[in-house]
Length: 191
Image (cartoon, rainbow, N blue to C red; front, side):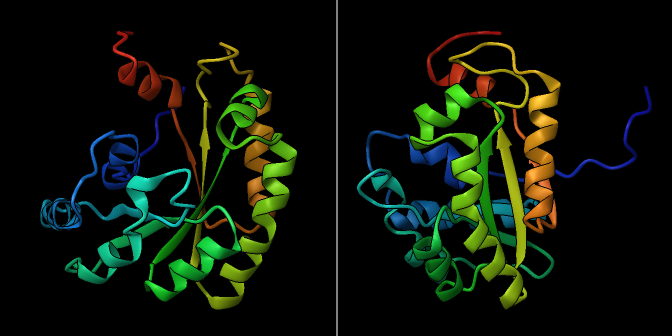
């Protein structure tokens, strides 16, 4: 097995790390966290999510967060954009990169975004096309690539299938995410 010569770390704490907090995290705390991560040298920070505040109230201040951060040259400030409304918010906030997200697990896709993998890819197609048209960097994140809290093992061919679908949408980069570990930690489990 040949190991890669380079691994890129995308810091998702300001988005994924905070989105499930029960107590509202003040905007100024989010801005300070992102600024500190920038100062620490992270080259890609997922700073916000432009999703419905009905479903993810913690991310309702995404536009304000993006307006107030101190942008460090050479750092990509990414935002999660599940649909065209989210994409429009990302463009208005001058995001450097938009992120679409899907699961390699049908069970997780249904539980997390209430649709199949195929339906999720179809939903992302207009976002991907709009990002390419605007010249915006497009990244895909594939969750449950190493296991699923609902179905258990996720076959490698399922991950490869979603990678191919995201590639076909024109993604500049595709992340492989270990969502089961994050979910286990949230639930207080140890691996």
